[in-house]
Image (cartoon, helix red, strand yellow):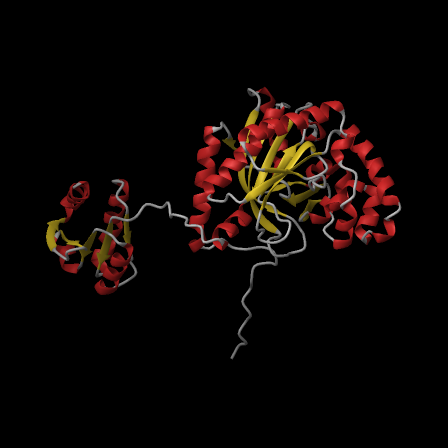
Length: 428
């Protein structure tokens, strides 16, 4: 007797979206699409595979980090591909490649897409996750930053999540980062031995990343760290001031977070994260983003300001389920159930069932079942108004039995008239 084989499971950090969870995804995406359409955003879908050089070029100082987290494969010696690791970078590539520079600006795009990162799997952190994101390309105004934050605020509220704060900071421009970086190195110089090993390495390569460290020792040291806003240029400081004034006007709840820098080097000026008051796990944002005025230029396009954010759909949906927030199922409810019995009835049921679809009448059936009783139980569970019973005798006679599920009253009707009869009864 052959040995029973062990079932193959999904790879670590990947997952399935099961049928019972689909209503949450439909609910969130319907809310999002309605809101984004009103604000003038158009959907874009980019390739799941990109040339690896795309993400490496966008990484700037963080090449080693990005390279480590990419799932890459070599098709030919000169062709290295990677699974999508950053939706924003893919959108920027599509903007350049498809001549969107000739479109009226700003170009407002949104996407719904999985992302793949080779990272340590922890609660709330996976190797495959899904993002809903928006990008406004071609406008450097402060009000764009505020509009994007306000848009995320309204979307979360519409979904039913309202206990969060927007953590916000400014990381200035290249000059500001250079000045602030020197101040940070001076601050950490006498504290190097107390920093974790990773932060001691970052001290030499990218001091800003120490601010994002989650170890207890480094977080304690960061409590007294110099604040970025004190090292902003006059232009960057004014930009940030205006963003905050717009947010004050919209009543978006925000917290100034001097340690917030985001995890991609292409960000400049405004950065933000939406953090729930009661986190699913520590330090996991629901929405995060900011301004990235040099990314398009870095990827080979013209100098183009841009800003955007991405929402972690898996995290948002986990929060909805965790809090037992009532999510209606947006699918239409069936009005009739087609019960069939016998080979001839089954054959004719295929065409009959499709006629109801063409007429726009929601119907359900269970063609593989042979028991009328079991099929009627399904019809009752679905809450349909009418069951149509189509047996061997009815198929031969050209008739069908119409049963009112609530009263149990039945009558026999010619099959060619059943469509009109159902329409009339549903209308009444």
